Length: 244
Image (cartoon, rainbow, N blue to C red; front, side, top):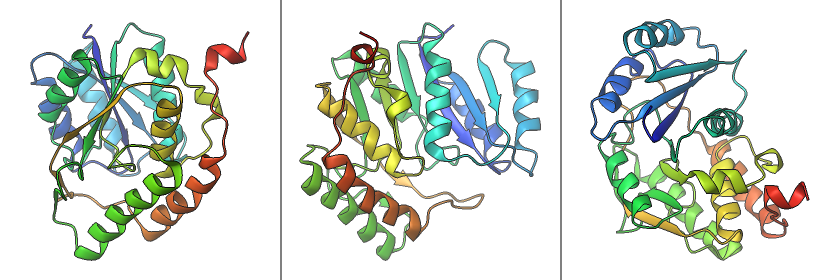
């Protein structure tokens, strides 16, 4: 078993899923993969089952009954990972918007002392390919807004390409995470920051999907923008403190 697990939520990712899995499995050092599959009608799960047989002990899948939200998919994956001896646990999209080669860079930053490593689109300017300018501006200023409201020292607050050290996910009270959409990404970063973990951003180039259908919408950004106001006043307590 590798020390790293990449969690990839899927819904209708037939066009991408085999390619992304094979690419991640080709990396050195090794990364295991957990697919959180939300009952895709396009046959995504069948492709993953075939790869599980081809790569036993490297590829895993948890199947859910339907689309239950990005946040709940990752929480499900985090809990699954914590039942196993993984030290580094990653979030990554299935559509190659996140370059799998950058997993190695995220891992290295964690080895060098970061508790949460963020693949950041905005730490060195704006590094986004294939997005219309309106969407770039919406995303960029949403992150600026989140920084202003929360005072969190993170440039890409909505980023979904991340590496957690195990101890971060063991400490965050995952059952208290409120948001299920993209505001989930902000809430997890905010929780790690409030709990005193070291957060490091490394620059990546984000490339919008070329195959499959985007799941981003203005409603997602609206949820994130409104959600941070409640986050600003939320008391973040470590999970261990709740059981004492």
